[in-house]
Length: 123
Image 1: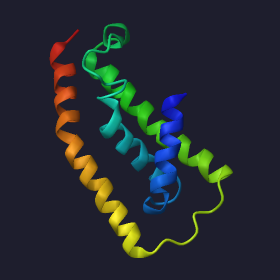
Image 2 (image 1 turned 60 degrees about the vertical axis):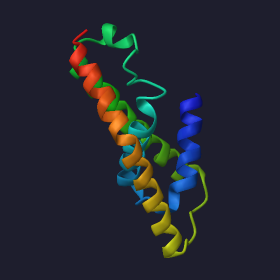
Image 3 (image 1 turned 45 degrees about the horizontal axis):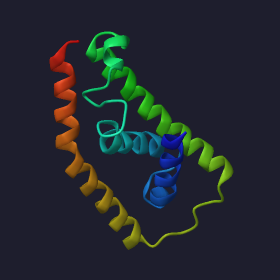
Image 4 (image 1 turned 30 degrees about the horizontal axis):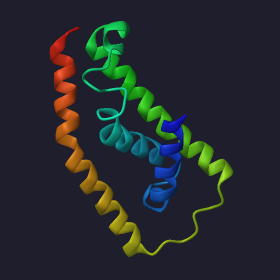
């Protein structure tokens, strides 16, 4: 439940900067994956679920697909229930995209490191 609320709040914040429909959902899911999956769940290197799911590469693949699906679902539900985004000045959209890109770039080394650690363990 908290992950869904956080995803929805993040989407409401960056909605003007995302492309519409499924592409925006996939981007949202990818951003959530890089920013939160290795810090909160499910791709923490000490997550015991990797011993239950199967080979680490399969677990990473399934959890990645779930994060992307969550992004698509959040966008689909928000587009159905929230009013239209309205118009946002181009400079603000550009600034939001740059800020989001910078956050992802900062978080990317930790994400890659956690994935490498998960895949190296072999469980």
